[in-house]
Length: 247
Length: 322
Image 1 (cartoon, rainbow over the protein chains, first blue to last red):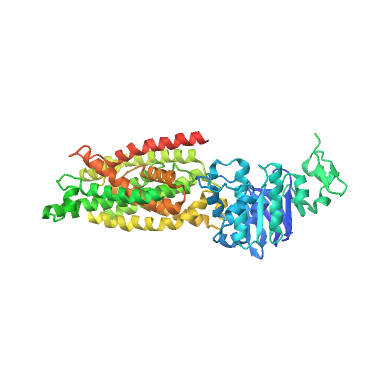
Image 2: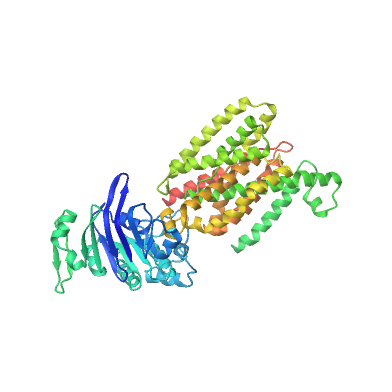
């Protein structure tokens, strides 16, 4: 479980997150949506322990500001929005860096799961954007697995460079992890959120403005207000919403 | 890796033999292998050539390992202690100690370490923000630091007396000519720990290639790792400069060649850089002693002659990739 009490984050004298009190449960995928600059990445960074904050953030009872990096690494694995590599490590070497204990034979299997079978020996600096993104996900998954598989997976826009099939594969992988651990995923694609997320948090200007199952949260009124753009929500017979943005 | 396992020891043996067998007196490699040296030969061997060889190995290793550390720290293969002003900073410290402080070897060593450390700290302040290094800022800051160190050194040179001036001429371009057993002992004391401790940072330095935030996420104490890397860089560079003056490019050539052959894993690159850095500097010294014999070339000229083209080559390659 991740709990925050009065979580407030300032950056360059601006308040990015306002007094958030939240509980994130294990066993489900929590999606985080909101317009650009609403504080999604900042919230994920604060929960991961990478940013100073006021208030409290606890993962499994550990206050992240004071927990050691090694303790945190066992509680959560993070995939950042963008990771740039400065040395030409191979794909397998990059993934292996995530391992907290000996990874055994997991690396080729993980790569294969993410559509990167046989990529192990390749130069990680020469991958396409989508391949690099899946490699980073494999690294985060390996960290979560070697930590026992019950920790948190925190993914910041993990599908931004991916084609449709890989987007779905990644969301499904996060679901599979959440069966034992927890997952927090920053997304932009609302339909993907409907498909893969159990609970949706909507962030606007550093505040949570909606929280619940996607089918309840995604309404015309809310989306139009939050995104400041006419967004009608349609419903297919089983009441699953799908979203088409109108020009 | 296997090819290297054979070639590197062979290369080392060849370089060591060449270094011990080159010099003004006719003590050839063949004569050394025969054994039974005369008194004069044995003095040349134990008091001149062996200290010079060992000093070269230590200084070259210190420079190469410092280069690897800086490149990992600044996340760029162009960060060489000499090029970005850490060497000149250490040299300024050493010159200050010689001219104003009387120039005992320990004082010179401490001052060189201090100068190098200040230079690395300035570079991290100027070129790094939020865990990212701006390489143009790094190189420009290096130019500024080198210019500043050069200017202050210039002022000090005009204040120096004749003996000091002779000492100072070593700093400008580097030389192993002043090698003594004491200097070797001092080098072992200062550079030795760098060579032994740097490989312990290898895993962390690998993770740093993904950025400081990612390294933190993977469980690393990033600030501590950086502090240790900076300290070892300053010790390695400062120690090398105090003992042999301004020798550039070893820290860029050696890691570059090794990474080309073996990939970037610091667990292999750090220890092998020490070996190859030592070998390369000793080889450069053999040429420095023999190309213009009986006169000696400053060794920094030779390393620049090899290193500057490699630097340009890396630049061209990066432009091709980008």
